[in-house]
Image (cartoon, rainbow, N blue to C red; front, top):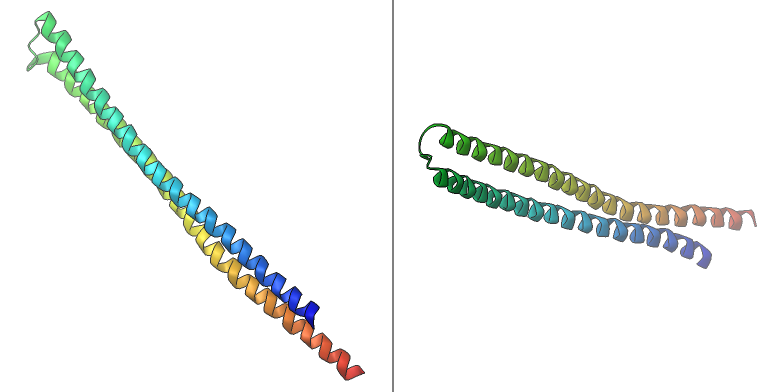
Length: 143
């Protein structure tokens, strides 16, 4: 009887250990998603800062040469530069959002696997116990 209980307990513990491993992987994936979001925010801020520096240096260069900043090609150049910066910001946000979404999907999958591993361990343990008990009763009947 004790070997049977040990085998059943072992199956349950294997399920429990796999469940814990999957939960840890889910937690790591969630942290990666948060890190991705923070990284994206920093990249966006860096791009905005770079855009402001570019605009300032353009103004300084145009002002030094005596160009009127409110009309003509100087204003068009600055508008195009701002447009390019905003396009890059959009691209960074989109890419960062995809990374974060992928990592959260991975976290969800690991969470489900964790639940299923625990259920599977319990079922394997129960099946081991029931099949072993059935075999023992067959042996006792034959004797």
